[in-house]
Length: 179
Image (cartoon, rainbow, N blue to C red):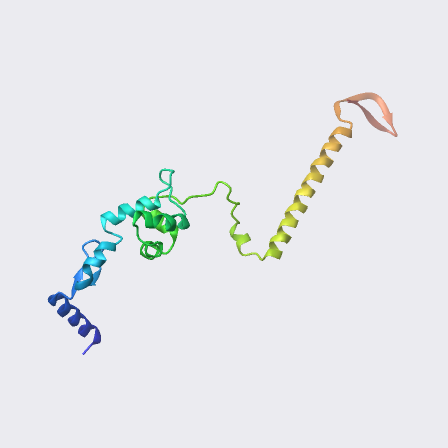
């Protein structure tokens, strides 16, 4: 006989005798003698959802708190543990906040994030890349300064006209007005 059939038969028999009960909030099967304890802490119970939301919400509307701030506020509100929420809502704190329609809190002094390419670099490679960036900026500055110097110290012709009858070495000449 297949072991899954035996297990299903055993579960059905336990359910029939009241040994297993289904939580009305999350649908999880719980031993009958543990259902009261489970429903008192079930994170899907409406009262618990309100407690969790109160501990998750920051002073700014629509913005959630950091994980460490939630852990500090959780006992005051009687909310579920952060590990329980992370397991239930997708494995990250951002997923927990998203489940409650909150955006993650961001520090106003947060450092700029690295690009994907920088994430894969070793510290020595990041230093080389920074040096290359500085060298490129220096080359650009030299090019701009050279162009500005040439523009300031070069004579520019504004008008050119033919000089009829004037030749130098057998070639016709032109007059150029410089400024």
